[in-house]
Amino acid sequence: MRDTVEIVGINIDKVTFEEAEDRLLDFLRQDETKMIFTPNSEFLVDAVKDRDFSEILNDGDLVIPDGIGLVIASKFYGMPLKEKVAGCELMTKLIEIAYSEKKSIYFLGGKEGVAEEASQRLNDRYPGIKIAGFHNGYFDEEEEKNIIDDIIQKRPDIIFVALGAPKQEKWIYNNRHRLGAKIAMGVGGSLDILAGRSKRAPEFYQKTGLEWLYRLLKEPKRFFRMLKLPKFIALAFYDAKTR
Image (cartoon, rainbow, N blue to C red):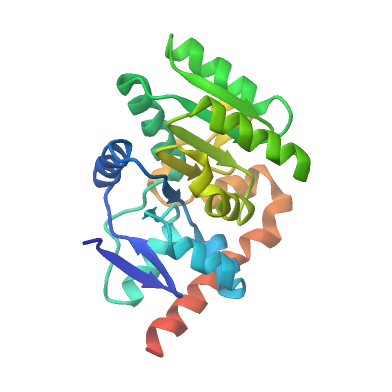
């Protein structure tokens, strides 16, 4: 049975990084598509206002706490999360597993050329890695049908979807029974990092839970998005105290 904590209505798995890795291995042995979601504080603020999004997150097979805000908020409920589990790091681990287990990968999302660049960099790092295919994140309804047909034909074991939240989670949920993959994971901006177009925060910021501050310093235009962090903390505190 899964051990979770409900934060503002969303069930978050209480797992360490190593426990999440074990789940990935288990998912790859099964025959149905497992959905991995990586919510942070911004996700949950949006999910409070979007019932479809919140229900989809709660249907995830592994929902990791990808942000220090969730770890802080879990303490309000008296059920603290074990640790932050960064989606970018879990994606990297899943790629390593795919390489060692000879599983195939499909990338969907990002700007033109990003998924291709990510694939090329992986081929350089992991010679012989199985990249089943890739497509950028800009497509209309007709192109989407072709993408899904391509995925069905190529039968990847793992699909990384980088369309931004909540679009990527809704896309995974709506197509999960058609994809035929073992794992579909929403990865957002992690694809840009994999492609080398952006960088993660230095280790100091990661360890101190200040990645948000690093991103703000690098991109001041994110200021208004960052306001969701204190809003989330307030929402979670109120929710926990009124239960």
